[in-house]
Length: 241
Ligand SMILES: Cc1cc2nc3c(=O)[nH]c(=O)nc-3n(C[C@H](O)[C@H](O)[C@H](O)COP(=O)(O)OP(=O)(O)OC[C@H]3O[C@@H](n4cnc5c(N)ncnc54)[C@H](O)[C@@H]3O)c2cc1C
Image (cartoon, rainbow, N blue to C red; front, side, top):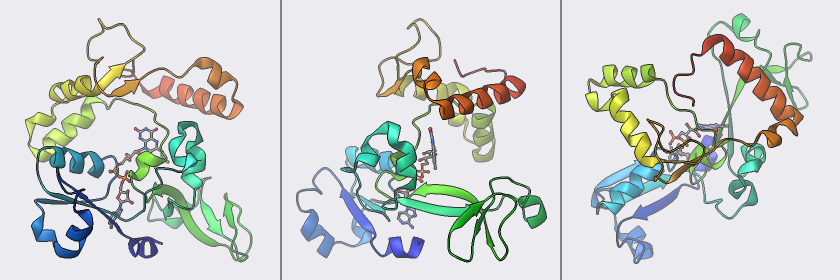
């Protein structure tokens, strides 16, 4: 599937002037004409390419998928489950968390392909079913997994930043410094502005999900109760205010 998608590789040239002559550029330029080539337009590559272009560099952004920006499944946040299964952008990978298949097969979410081509998820597959692994959905389209994610905001634990700081040897990854970036980008809509560690003038709106939406949706309610039970056992809730 990856190969098939790569054959329709999309290229986006970004620069302060690139859009004006993008057609002729495509015919006459090579990768060496760009200051930067960014591969993948997801949450990482998209903003990186944009920022570089805004800073005046010539940037080539390469994206394996196409632009689904006009599609309803892409545009409506509450339809994220539809977006995750939309064949126009979903890349369904199957992965294994354990080398030992016996151990892996104990996972209740293990998926198999039956001889009639249909998928079976569970631990009691029909005779002859081929094991695939655990579903690992990805989105192969302009915007990457930002196109089908649930827009849930969770602030990282300090130990996550400390780990990156230690493996890069770069102190700018320190929890304290990274918090300043979060404050810069956040536009908090649920806490009093006197609260420390949050931002109120950035572009990333954060709000609490209305409880009525949750209690009216039995599936979502079960998920939230399960998550709350798990968090009650393991988390000290340092940052999820
Ligand atoms: C189902 C799901 C739900 C999620 N929900 C949330 C959530 O609620 N909140 C949250 O914060 N995060 C969520 N995430 C995680 C978040 O979306 C990802 O962490 C984030 O999108 C990763 O960004 P990325 O740029 O690293 O990769 P991606 O967003 O995956 O982008 C990679 C891009 O690269 C392209 N690409 C891949 N290979 C090539 C190639 N060879 N050449 C050119 N282009 C290529 C892909 O098409 C894609 O556009 C979710 C993720 C998934 C899968």
